[in-house]
Image (cartoon, rainbow, N blue to C red):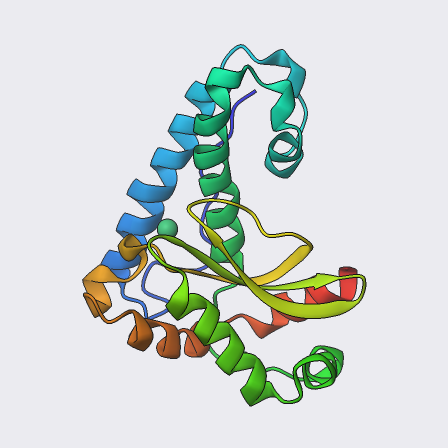
Length: 196
Ligand code: MN3
């Protein structure tokens, strides 16, 4: 078994001017590809994971030899998180319907949700991800370090590794986070919420 780099669900320049072509090309073609390659190398010969999804393998890391676990967690986690991230990006969608109602119910307002998400993304020290997740029907915001996955079912994520924004925003992570709202694929988030 081997994981492969998924094709992007949009053209490399589809997120401009908020997320530019060169950033997407390097982020997908170099960074994400490296996670795929390194995950495959770490998993080589581990037939106990045959047929499992990336998420399933990560949930069963104790079945891997101890010396392989860190490499699998970091690199397979990197692959799973980036695949999820790309699927959540698109320009021109809007938040509405049951998802908006649930956000208002659980955060008080859409603005309060956005503030909580931006804060989680801005205050994640070093490299990691901020998330909107649903667990037992309730929405919440969280963040994870490195390439760790969140608890609960992820609906939306932002990559706050420096490689995700440095070409476009240099050290200005808060500006990248604010601009991110222009490229959230709310249709995908609503679809994931309905399925959860
Ligand atoms: Mn990244």
